[in-house]
Image 1 (cartoon, one colour):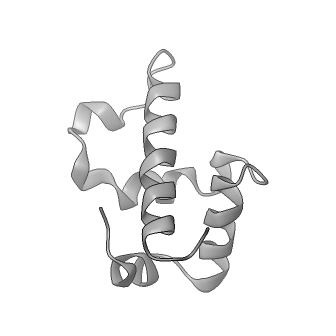
Image 2 (image 1 turned 90 degrees about the vertical axis):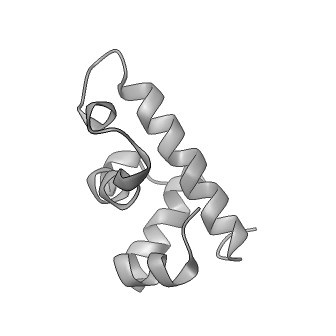
Length: 78
């Protein structure tokens, strides 16, 4: 879990709005995919973050779940 401070230090207000739209399915993950991956990189082994076609969906889904949880936890989405 990331803190609200970490989120606000890592993403601009405009990017946070995009993150919310990504979680709600209104924007594609790829819009900020690399930034999201970098933001949560400390929670994964280095091998997990390498784009492999067969594992890309797993990583993308896991990152979206973490992001959604953190945004809900800090009241940025409801």
